[in-house]
Length: 173
Image 1 (tube, rainbow, N blue to C red):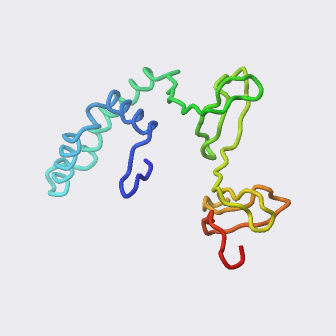
Image 2: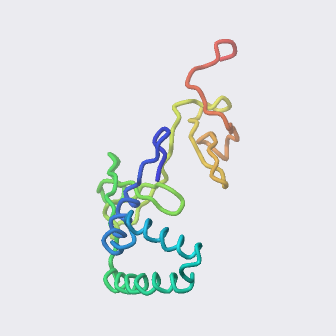
Image 3: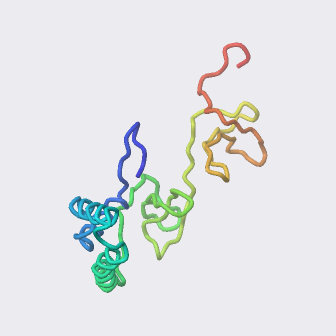
């Protein structure tokens, strides 16, 4: 899920996983299942049924579904569409695409695995560094917090937690 204003919007990966879950576990991924489980748990609370028996009945069917899904999904890879960019790979000339890794988004050559060229995605703010005149870019701290720093780092050590303005100060420039 990603945030879109005040609402949440499903990611492409989330949509693919939901589709797979609905295909592989149709008895579980539906509203009727939730209502049935609530009724069974209410029966346990009222003392009409034992919780161990209720759990055992659920697990029998669930285990069979999991084992069947494991067999059917063995070797299946999920392929997500990649966002193409207008940048061209310097090494092979193919277009670069945006991929998502464990550290976030990055650009990679669409000719992978023959060409393994990758690049960081630089979020340029359009503002100039007040110390050296370089570009101010958006970065992330080790804890994932967004900050703004000079692209000339380590030669220039300008950083700010506040987003920079493209306008210059009328008093000091």
